[in-house]
Image (cartoon, rainbow, N blue to C red):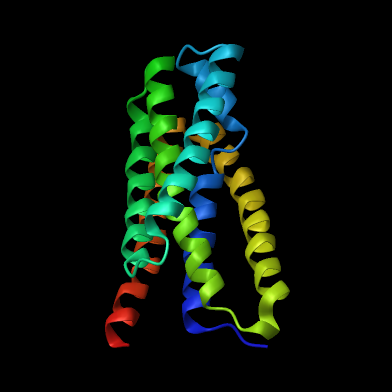
Length: 187
């Protein structure tokens, strides 16, 4: 059983992205309170993110169905996610937090369906369950480690340092996945 080169790049890029994204994790509630949010603001900010993400998963999935430029769109989604992560630095009230959350929902919805499609397309029949187990298992492990490191950065330094670190890691994920653009040109 062997993963294709494309599947390996997709897994590496996704794991880097999950690491950057996962650093905020449960700290989101603390951050939301820090910018003036209360329990309802935290609830609505997270609900905004989930609803926007869900709607745009469907829209992006439909728009990109059978399109040849999925790699470009996925890398763009990763870069947009990094940019919006940096925007957390400038959030000073709950409304701005809602806007950033909505933007992050759109960014995830641009990157994830394209990633799923590319990953599924680059699996052999002998790897069908194992490949998806790798994808999900690795993301859970990486996110769990990221939660811990994010907590350490926030506790010992600041939220600003956390967001800068997250954004840089997400840019690195975009760079790793952009290798797919060069592989596609060779084929």
